[in-house]
Amino acid sequence: MRILCPSCQAAYEVPDKLLSSGPRKVRCAKCGGDWMAEAEPEPAPLAGQAEPEVPIAAPRAPEGLPPEDDEPDLPPPPPVVPQMQPVGDGPEAVVPRPEEKLVPEPGERPSRALVVVAGVAWLASGAVLAGAGWAAVAFRAEVMAAWAPSRRLFALLGLG
Image 1 (cartoon, rainbow, N blue to C red):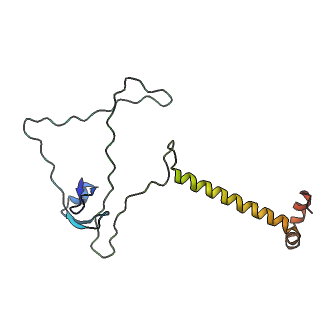
Image 2 (image 1 turned 135 degrees about the vertical axis):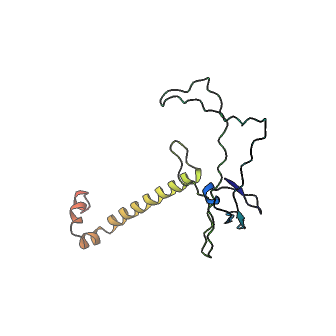
Image 3 (image 1 turned 45 degrees about the vertical axis):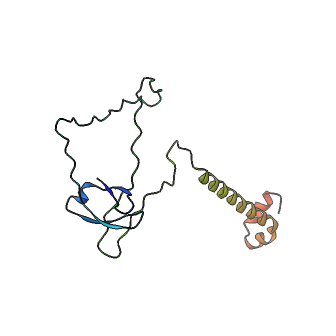
């Protein structure tokens, strides 16, 4: 069931069973307004009017095969509306937040920001490893004195 915030007109999808037992107090995640939401009866079709037809999707081609050229164009899917949960009666009530998409779906291109962050992380990791290698070579006498097994490694590298 879809409910609207009376203050800001934000739309929410609420499972029918949550409002079937009577009005419930809810809080808008967008503006923070509280109101009593109740189930609205479905409008009955007027006499003489047929129910609207629901388009039937054409069967899809099996994976690996190209789609047929004569497939009908399907309408776009409806927009995603955030879910709203009823608010508890106490002061510790939690306001629901819409879920954020952090990871791209398989086959979807990652966002530019995600690519930049990943590149910076790789560069930082490489810099740390290069710095550790340089320090091990520059201070090899101290490393060999503190950790005897490192003498074999430095001897193999021709630095011992």
